[in-house]
Length: 468
Length: 61
Figure 1 (cartoon, rainbow over the protein chains, first blue to last red):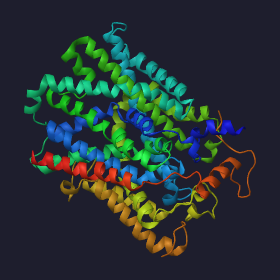
Figure 2 (cartoon, rainbow over the protein chains, first blue to last red):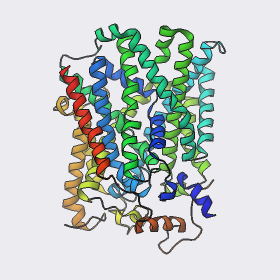
Figure 3 (tube, rainbow over the protein chains, first blue to last red):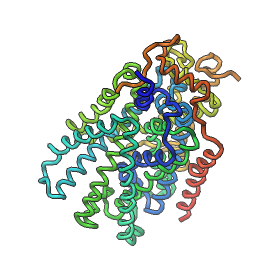
């Protein structure tokens, strides 16, 4: 294999990228991240916020929560990914061990595949609606034939784009990022047409406790953005340093979600529907409906491309998959999405959201563990060789490849989160109304990880920690 | 297109291409810089101060 070929395909592996291969500047990174972040989930996030808060408070709480969540993700995975050009999954090996990293890898895979199955089904439904609005399709055929077919078409398109690796992501995002501006136009349209109703609207599920409602809005923002942990490493490793990545991540990935979620907040408050493809037809007729449906389709496709890329790079950390051709890894990553979209789209639509809610619970503790480990326990010292050393004597082998301390800390964080806030029922306990659930969960995990590591792991000489 | 991998295993069984990449990182030549003071300031502004301000405005409204 020639050196040139090695470099051209480096972004399709989980191996560290060389500085010469990390060519994304702030603008390119910001555009790619914005394309990845803006999707149909923004309406769902906005819808949930709009159940508890009015437009003004909901927008501010969601924006604040999103920026806090983005900061946590960036501080957790960012430094290791940026310094060494590796992805999010590889960045967890110093905490979870040379085999234990499979736990975050599984979280990433399930989260990305689950969400992207939903997004591609959304894409298929939007495309089907678009064809109906244009008069090219008879209503009623959609769910049985067209949705599976368009899901398959979307998977083939994603596969084709990603054959080029990261350059496929950046090429398509340069075009698809336009949908963010279409989204802002839709927001302006709704706000300008419905301002009096929007100001007067009262959230449907608001509780008597105003602070609880407000904190819930913040929590929705934080927990939504924490899911970006799964995506962020594969994208920011294309940037050469922290300064290049910091602002594009915060503004490119952190800001579009709350901005576009305002469409969902306004929609559910005024028109009782967060999905613009439903209400825009009422507001502006078929032309606006076509624009909205095209927007939804483009948005979901852009996110799916970034997600499948991140997941495929994450899978490369498995030794067996590391050696497979890129096209086979892409097929392995896309196969579950295609099967879900073709065989069980409606069943998946109805039930998988609950599972994903619980998967999301684990990202706050994961971030807490990584932040505590990197900044407090290791004091920024990471051994890149140990990250790629799978031997039982490697520095990050801990005990049989697993670090029990990180696993305990992860479990404690999840328990804290679920005690404070049940993500399905939104029943809360204790100091949730003052602290949210994600922040205490991240803090508890980080604290448990730091304390137990100092007490047990450092004295044992395992994990590559330096004794004080 | 296959992932980059070396044809010859090095002494510690890492593929040669991976060994080359790790060697570059260990020497510091291929290492990216962590967040510097300027980027940490941006993170403080965008991730802490701005959210705090927004929350205060929203709560007082």
